[in-house]
Amino acid sequence: MNIELFIARKIASGGLSGKKLAGPVIKVATLGIVLGVIVMIISIAVGFGFKGEIREKISGFASHIQIMSYDYNYSPETNPISIDEGLEAQVQSLDGVSYMQRYATKPGIIKANDAIQGVVLKGVDEAYNWEFIQSILVEGRLPVYNDSVRSDEILVSEEIARLLELKIGDKIRMYFIQDKALARRFDIVGIYNSHFPEYDKMFAFVDLKHVQKLNGWEESQITGYEIGVSEFKLMEQLNEEIYYLTSAKVEADGTMLRNRTIKQLQPQIFGWLDILDTNVYVILLLIILVASFNMISGLLILILERTNMIGILKALGSEDWSLRKVFVYLSGFIIGRGMIWGNVIGIFICLLQKYTQFIKLDPANYYLSTVPVHLNLIDLLLLNMGVLVVTMTMMLGPTYLVSRILPVKAIRFN
Image (cartoon, rainbow, N blue to C red; front, side, top):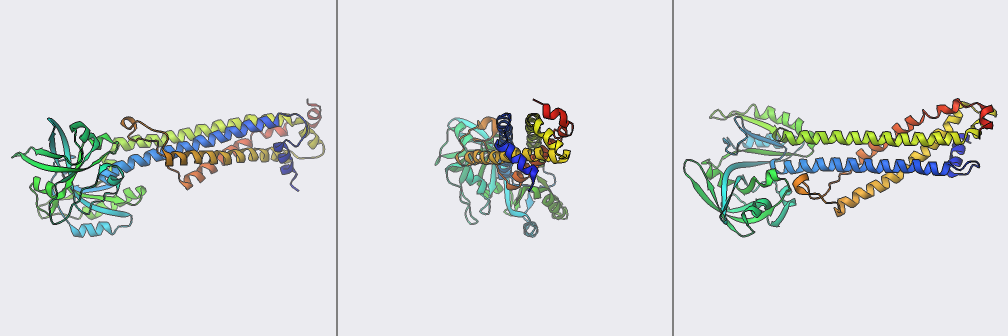
């Protein structure tokens, strides 16, 4: 029989006679662990969820990696590169590449209802990955493009539609300022809203053939390629592998290629997301410390309450470590019970938000309409292991008080 475990269970259940502080103290300590675990689970779920949603929005418009002309200057007016089916096959054969698509851009001005708005036309073809755009489509349908006929269908953002008072089915005229002013007419078939103003006010999607003709390019010329990766953590590694492929390519006119990631495209936003990660870790550390000190206070009260018991057991020959184990086991009961209930409640709240989205946000300030949550089993396991190890380690300190208690004085203690 494990006598230390037996005594700890009796104290935890209130089965030992004597002072009655143990019950309230254990409840308060357990509640502290429960609240701490709930807040930590919500913090990592919301923090990682927010980061994931912002990354998804950026990669949805620009993909994870782009290949373009080496003299690309971050302007919508770009120098073309030639379509290279050999390069396409090499890139798509890399492990972790989920898709590779062609695109071209052209800045222009939309005029409608006596109002004008500058936009960037993004030309895409029938192989374009519409998965992200489909998820943010609020009205209408996706445009349909094919190899044979140039389509006049255009997809605009809800922000542009609001500014110009446009709706599905409207015909709009666009003007392009260059050596010779050009005008084109498009039919609005869909409206999207990503709640990301930097992109919503900028991009409209059209047939790649339109942009090629407006730029005076041949059918074999494009602005570049967009490449999607299966996992975000593979992006930097794949970018290096693609670099070795593109650096070996020199076109007949001397054009060289370069590639970049969305981190290089939006360094400010990703720097902000890195700071968000730091904030989450600081919150976790502070909550663990608060919960631990709450446990320390409760354990000290329990030790003082059981001073008589400690003295009697010492007089009967119990060793200090044996008595300390009683309170280590007792701490384990409290922490374990608190973690179980904290996980149940915390995960329930996160799942409730994920499937009902009852907590809303202002998209103008947060880029999102609801609080995002992302629950990962590995993150939850690491969090629970961290809480258990830190709190149990900190509980060893107060148990040293047991070794300082003298049997004679402890038996008289009241």
